[in-house]
Length: 270
Image (cartoon, rainbow, N blue to C red; front, side):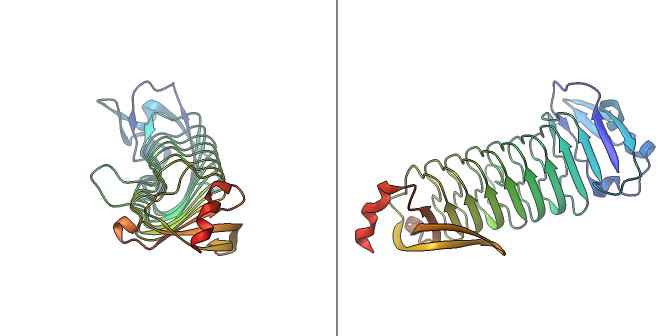
């Protein structure tokens, strides 16, 4: 196991794709110290920014002790191993992740899990905007794996979602699941506006209060519970809406009946 401890509070963004179990695999501490990173516009060695120690424990592969909210692209493209961050994490955490596990005992900045293909990303605090979403101009969203956020999530999460499971224990911001094609999202508390806008497939489950259902969704039924993943279901009853009809979509939006009495007017269309 490799332990990284920041040597200072970072003032500028640090690009550190090298903090990755696949990159560290088979390297000595002396070799890891020499790995290249960028702090702002200055090229540096990883050892210039972190105290790096090795312990006999096999798991997790990498432990980061301290806030690294300015350190970006930790675990980028990782295929195996485990990273534990005891503090806040920077932008693009776990982007293009294809396997392994990342645990954040704090908050994560924007674009966490972008273009994720497999593995587990678990954030014990809050997640910033664009969780599991691509960069602007790209339509390559999350395709697999699992993301769990124990706190709240910012705006524009799961844009162009094409697979995988996202579980949010707290609240979610607006435009959740914009243009999603497949996959599953479960929001255990409340969700902002425009949820599921332009979705064509997949399912979104809102167990709390939903600010609005877009007029391009039509009510289909009421369901007692809905499967989230193998061994996990959300208990309803839920109103089931189909949409986004503006995109000829067949996605499903499940909204808690008990927590959204304002939607009872839709029952006359069943």
